[in-house]
Image 1: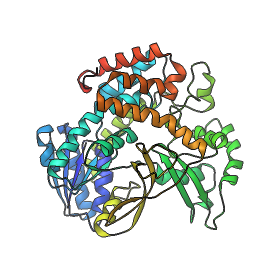
Image 2: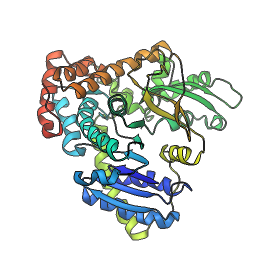
Image 3: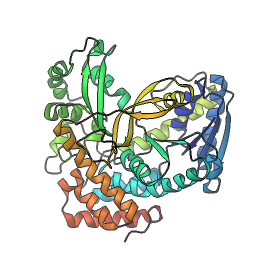
Length: 439
């Protein structure tokens, strides 16, 4: 068994995913091929994983592959490929994605999934993933690609439509969605035995059903708890509760993400909304700086004290591989194309997030049917941007980038068309060689 990790300089995430694999009877002795263009960070990952081998009892082999010229070797013969690259890094590209829009009066929180930040991140990432896909088609054509890189729907959707690589998009939010909601509202007694149905698109999949162990609908109780939380100035997750009040359903991704997926909450003419909904503007750059400092301290401590154990994370990767290799049935929320009309009131070429059952025969997305009309309508405001961004990446037409930005809910609510085009032009120029040429 060979598991290749693309973007293995992301040491914290590598430790989580590969650490989980080292706990699996089916995967613990696999060959783990680590690929990155940053040699120093790749070596940090190697140090950590070698320490984890001792802690978990794994006899797996860890091999490093540094630089583009060695990527095919990293992929050759792989059974599973995990993608977690961030093209352009925090500096310069993420900083550019925040600072240039800010000049035009456009504020963001995370900027990795939708909005102008999500569009630019997709446009610089998709060409690299195309190269990955070409290498996979050549040296591991039967491998399953587990994509963790955002913007999830744009990248996974592109690969699923335009390459022969078997791609499954994975997020961290679906598996903790209802749990966080119940804990935040003080309803922990309903955690055990609960059942749920979640479907929609990545970062805006809807908790369509949540029932207790006896099958009772928990939404009426949840709605009664919301006013107190909305009145609490310290509570952070208000936008998702506001979704319940206005659209009827809770959604998977955090409020700081969802603040920028719509035209409702970050509005220059209504600055009071920022405090009212506890919206953390510029959160992602701040988070990157804090995580980098935290990791350096943690890495030093790990070198001094060693790794004693690893606890199974909530990530889907190990469970998927266990199901495919060992036959242990597993259900996830996966990002797949809607070609079989899994969600009947969303487009067939959209990448949707739906329940998927996994066994030795493969990944089996479940038919959901129609979403509530308002949920589908909210999803479509995001899908429009996703499909136009994919079109831009495919055709290299600048007009498609303009159109994606013009139809983005938050961007359109704040800027006129001329400003949007000027901002896009400035972003393209600032990203330089990280983007292909557009005409």
